[in-house]
Amino acid sequence: MRYLAAIITFVAIGTFVVLSNAFFIVQETENAIVLQFGDPVGEVALEPGLHFKLPFIQQAVHLDRRIIDLDTPPERVLSSEQRPVLIDTYVRWRIIDPLLFYQRSRTFFQADQTLTNLLRSNLRAIVGEVSFTTLLSPERAVLMERTQQAMNEQAERLGIEVVDVRILRADLPDEIEQTVFRRMRTEREALARETRARGEAEAVRIRARAERERTVTLANARRDSEIIRGEGDAERNSIFADAYGRDTDFFAFYRAMLAYQNSLGSADTRLVLSPDSDFFRYFGDPEGEE
Image (cartoon, rainbow, N blue to C red):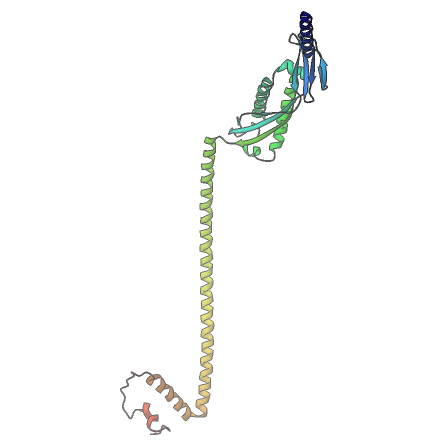
């Protein structure tokens, strides 16, 4: 009985091993290829589910059918101005023909290497046709579409479809960037000097025009004031002459009072005159008669 139990156990374990090696499961995110002694046999298992293969003789290779991201290292390429540019890109791809992919690439690592080389060669060709400024403009999307199409034409023979190509960053190398920065700084400083010179010249013109207008305005004001003053003096003289003609005694008295006010108004005024001078004739006699 003990040997019978051992035999049954051995048969059960062997059956389990054989069955577990004969069946394999394909997930929804996978494709599978059945190999026999290293060569593909049968149909590619595209549908997810449980599949059968010959145990021990055949083996199943599972391939991811999802979109795969490839982040490539920055590539140094030359623009149309022969200016070196560092371009950092990424690629998204997927397997469209599992059997062809396995025959040409075998592993995802090898596929990544092949796609990286395709990306570099196409970037050199396409970026070399445009200027650095174009890489920083909206036209960059068109360049990426061209790169994707060119890569797809070459990747199709690998059983691969390039879903997307994008430039993450396009920069000048550090040494070129410093040179460009210094040149831009020199250009901006020259532009600033030119702008300041134009501003100073314009300021001189404005000040000269303002000074000229000021001089003309003051001259016109002086002219008008002299005219008005002359007209006022003439009017005053006319009034005085009319008043003098009407009452000569009052006019003489008024003039004498003004003379007293102007000459004797200050406390320290000293006059050396004869007491019987005509200047003092109204002091003793309000009538001013001698």
